[in-house]
Length: 110
Image (cartoon, rainbow, N blue to C red; front, side, top):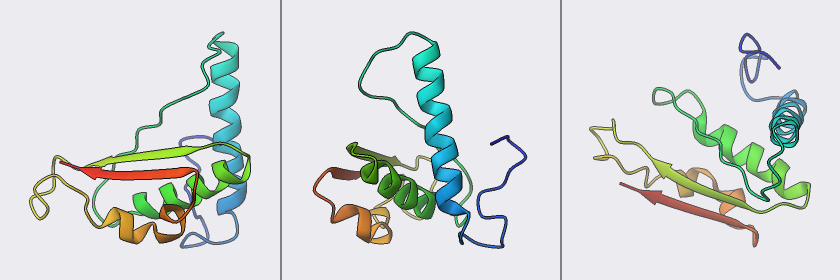
């Protein structure tokens, strides 16, 4: 997956989201392995303007990671949001399926 590959080329987050999540996870694990990092955790940072699908991506990618037998923690921070004052309080409600999973932790914070 390159920077030119958009998540959800089909105009939304349709059928190719699972394939793209697999690609992203594969890239992350390959980089982690090739760097000699044997840590059992890794971090991913996402940014973008409101409404572009960050929460949708996090939920779907998180569900994919869970399906691979891993655990997920989401620490959501939005320091640029004038509406929420820097806290993505709605993220947990937008990621309802992920938030209900035993091996997932979601923490919105300011």
